[in-house]
Length: 204
Image (cartoon, rainbow, N blue to C red; front, side, top):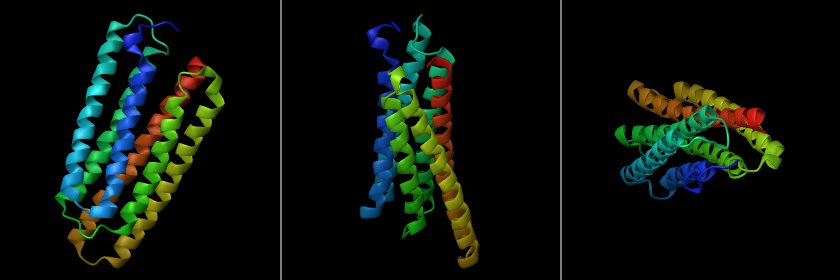
């Protein structure tokens, strides 16, 4: 699997998931200081950095004759990882725009599941360059799918509680949109896991 050293796509993927780790840490910081404006600005910067990495991958993909895995799989994995960062930014922007204070504990439950999914994705990406790690990577992907199921269940229960206990319709609309955005993050994590599975099946 020879390709120009400057176009090490595995390194680029790891740059992308590093952005994911930074973003979820910022989300967790909301529990400590609750400064949504500051954290939203941080995630915007991370999202911009992640976009730059994604563009770098796609630009170099067009310049590379030989790639370590199929070109369409590189493009799809790049896109799906980038989508996770985009969804995280969307979620925190909703918190900022709607001035949610205090932040409900259910939001942090959602963030904890997102963190678990991202952790599994980081493990999978870190092993991607080694075909011998095929089974390990597939297990990481399976864990992400399991976490996404948990997130679906949490999302459903949170909405049930919201509609039962909250009387203000405007607050219901705001919180539902935030919960939907957070649930969408785990959906996008599952997309990354599916991209990884496809790479493993086709290439390893």
